[in-house]
Amino acid sequence: MAMVSSRLVFLVSICILVSQAIAQPDFLYHFCLDKGNYTSNSTYNTNLNQVLSSLSSNTEIDYGFYNFSYGQSPDKVYSLGLCRGDAKPDICRSCLNNATNLLPLLCSNRKEAIGWYDYCMLRYSFRDIFGIMEDSPAFFMWNMNNVSANYDQFSQDLRTLLDSKRVQAAAGGSLRKFAAGNATAPNNQTLYSLVQCTPDLSDQDCSDCLAGAMGDIPNCCDGKQGGRVIRPSCNLRFEIALFYDPTADNASSPSLSPPLPRVPSHDSRVTESNQSKSSSVQASINEVSITELSPR
Image (cartoon, rainbow, N blue to C red; front, side):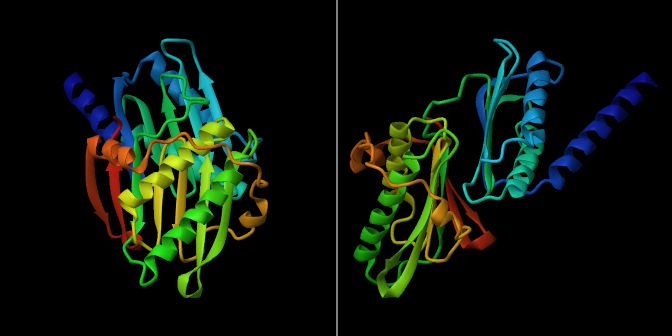
């Protein structure tokens, strides 16, 4: 009888976890990093639940960046939440609430995980992740449609626009490093872009992270009408259709002299990507394709 009761409790618990996961919208992508495990009744699990609860329930922060830690080493948990710079506070909180519910379910018992929605990113770890620029794990997304004409001019216009936004984002303060804007592309098209760093980065690290992400564009989105390069510490996106709140153009950080990017040459960027364990996944939504770059 006791064995039957135990099995029943186990099955009920599984059903609850599955129903909770189904109730949350899917991430664009997520990684459950193989850097250590915890058990369900451990101090680490208690600390993780506490830090995620603090993050999702906080209503005082209105600038879209959350960094909390809880507990003592070796069971201390660090968490970081970042909302897209044009996301309204209610959208931001809703996004992070979904993320804090879903990520621990998808990455059950993993000590380190990261997940991205369109409007927010959540990561947590057993190690200090604050103020540290990290470029992996990362993934690419791109529009399936190709640039129809004047490819060289399109690429030049894109580079100029992203460089301008990189400068603005890197010059942001400790609350927000974000910039969005547009430029005229060939055939009188409007090219829109958005870049963002976690604001705990230094100006230089933000600039370097975005410069590295820009260097990945030829590896994922060359000749495409849109694309994204998404890293733990920064991300960028470009499209020929407006995809962000246009008021974000005016809210972007003021332009200052740019930190000079410390990034490898394009050839060495390609070499690093080739050394990563890479796999391609086709997604039917919005006609995008996704490529994963596993941590090195």
